[in-house]
Image (cartoon, rainbow, N blue to C red):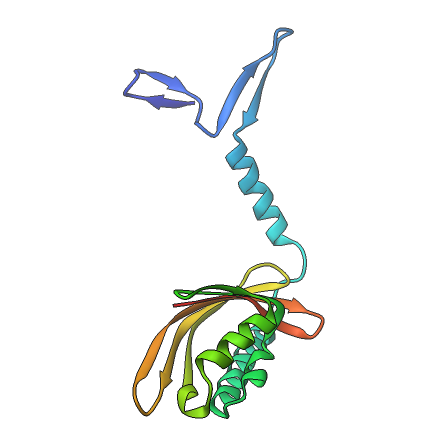
Amino acid sequence: MIHNPEVGSSSLPRATKAILHPEGGLSFRVAPVCFAGACILLLSCGGPQRSAPDVIDIRVAMAAQEEAWDRGDIPGFMEAYSDTICFISSRGTRCGKSEVQASYARNYPDTAAMGDLTFVIHEVIPAGPDHAWCTGDWKLYRTADTLGGGFSLLWTMEAQGWRITRDHTY
C-alpha cells in the first residue's frame, strides 16, 4: 500500500489493481503497460544478440559505400541496400532498390556531381537479433559546394548479409 497524502488514504500502486473475489480472497491484476514492458524485457533476453563483429560488418559496408561513391559507382554504392529499401528525405519517399538507384543516377549524373562522400557514424545499436540502427552525419565535398546532413539507417540481416532496409536522410 502507498499512502497518498493528497487524498488522505492509502492506495495500491497504479501499476496494480486489487480484485476482491465474492468467494473470498484477493488477487492483483497488473496494468497492461507493465505486462507489455515485462514481455518486451523477457523477449529481449532470449535469442542471439548481435556482437561486435556485426557492428564492424555494418561499418565496413558503409566504408565500401563511401569508396564506391567516390569512384562514381552508384551500383556499387547500392550493394549495401536491400531490395526492399525505402529512402526517406526532404524530397519524399522512394521505395524499392531500382527506384532509389534511379533517383541517385538522376540527382548525381557524373563524378563531379557525386564529389567525395564522407560518413561519420555516431552509433550502431543492435535492435534484436536481425536488426540494427545506425545514426550519423554525411558530407559531400564537391568543387562547387559542400552538402551535408544526418542519417538514420535500419540495417537488417538478410541471406546476403547486412542490408539497409530504411534510410532516413536529411
